[in-house]
Length: 493
Image 1: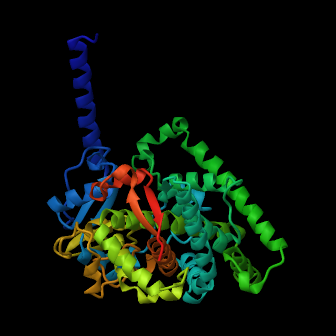
Image 2: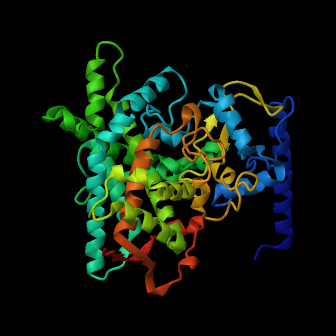
């Protein structure tokens, strides 16, 4: 048992240490200049990190309600501007988009994406503009997305058959697992030319890759704690996973260079290798750049697609009257056809409204990937310094009661009565970002989402296991850690 006197001595020493540390940090940090955005009180070393819960976007929403829609907080020593209103998002992603278009260099993505040779994390500049142009013009143009229509239709048909087999054996269907496999198979075929599933360790490597990319270690914000890297095993884990992924992609590229191919079946690696050959004498792209772009495609095309599909099906099952309205629309358009195709989707306004409403309530990335300011500027009269990180809370904006009637309610019909879209022109609704750093793969993502949801509601009626009531289905973020288990009954015309 520690004596009271010893405890008090330790406590007093700690208080004195923190007091002098705080004084030293204040004396050695640059004095703020001008009129700064509102800020919550912060602690020495930690800044405002102690005020962030497991759902950071929710914590920031609560702070913004007290301190305003444009708020300056600190993650350790890093100043971060938080935008939680459509007006602030417009100022950052449109009015001053150019000076807000840089990316901070994050240590883990830098190592996993070949020193940020990808599109998502590359710093703003000539290299990024060139690589993004390649993606927009050669990989993700409307014409190219349309060319993969057969892949999407075939894979969604296989998904339907898989669910039918499970239903025939009276087994519950893990919709999360089914939709995850679908997203992975579509992206594998489009990006790599074939599926890597059972019998391959690619899915396991990719899953660990995703976890690492989302990880921001404490020493990223508090350099004083960088000594912990010797003991937390993070560096070894990054090196191991990065090596495995690089070896896998190296084999993929070698196979593509050696194989015979048909012009009508070009995948992303084929297209990038063609571009590499055609520009070999001018401004070639390296193999590492090709690998980094492919990794971007998987990061943006699998995780976010699965998240969107899971939330959409969760909300439909939770709202059976909306599910029924959508089923009636899809089945009426399908008529006597066994399988709908992508042409049919244009006749389904309610389907599009359902997906928009799902993206509004549950944006796949609640906090858009951070930006970094490249020069001092003013935002709404506040002074913001160069080097400040910027995060846009699209989750909070899409639930702002001043912008949306009954913002917490799943009400797709609102989008039948308005022209608001998610392609970066309406800043109250930007689940894919906007401006120079907006997601270039919106068209591809939406094509997959619409076809999957349409085929699911066309072919099956869904209910929860063991007679659970649909209204009791949890729609908090914690629920997405659990698989969506359902009973899927085949629909008979």
